[in-house]
Length: 467
Image (cartoon, rainbow, N blue to C red):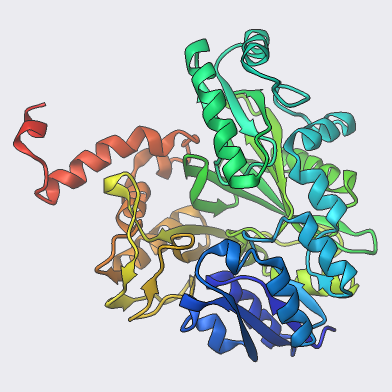
């Protein structure tokens, strides 16, 4: 086992990794930016190194500073968490060259799945279904128009190096396509340093289903069943659940087998996630593979009893998976996660940084809260708005919904705005309760909920009411 691991991240995922290390008897090193001095992960780790000022480019994305911290503290390995450098093949290569183990897949696997077009082509070759679309980057306006004419509207523009909904635009006609193309390219360049985009047929009412993969260096590859990530806004997830209410065991077997095929196609090792779109006729299509631990990994842990972060670490050491046979992996009950973000959903999800003055975290049977916040904590404007992940598990989906509703009612975060009111509304919605939602769910209910919420708060103007 490693003797010391550096956690190249912040927030709740840094805490999650540090806690797993402590339980495994591994010492930890935290890195932090100057405004994160009082963040809990800094104090929970055995050692801590400041790596720069607030901007991510000068701290959590600063590879030389992170490697220097690793060398100064003499660590065996680096765990990147999710986001920041977690899917940076160059960072993984540098770790290898410095004789520091990168706790994640190989640089080759990261690169293969990081280029979305290359990943699509590889999946096509090995027989994993993909959505109709381009096999290479769009060359320009005329090329884009020809592609759309061939595969027919609606289409979606995607960044080849994309993620998190950036560099993505849905288009229903030529005018929108031409205007969105440049916008998507500019956004992709700013977010990923690569302006290349491709075009796919847009599925209008799909569900977003992902399969959790674990693979070791001994040839064992398994999945830990699926998570339903259909509830999202602008391709960013808000609420996830496991298992999916839309999938029976027959479909689960088919999709799971394809997820394993996708992982094996790149000789994948570590934890990862294969993501699919599922249409209304039960057909599914490969979307992408995330070569890291996911934000929502906790709900899979709740229904399988498998600690994914510990498995990641053991795999990196060279150990075998704790469960190596697919048919031995349990699936018990139903789990739901609500992402609690410092955003105001009634005001177009505007950021709501600031100091938390009242903070009461829910508890009780079936409740898990992964967070780095506390009373007096300052939500910083420099990083992701995630405050924490509220997770629950029940014997079935109905019980899980009831536990989550109770937990959300207990949750107090003031005075900043959060997504808690929206989650309460989602859980009450009959479409959600029947499990019949699609990826446009938030878009469809948001206007109605926002109007109602604004009126109840007494902020609707007379002219708005007349309309």
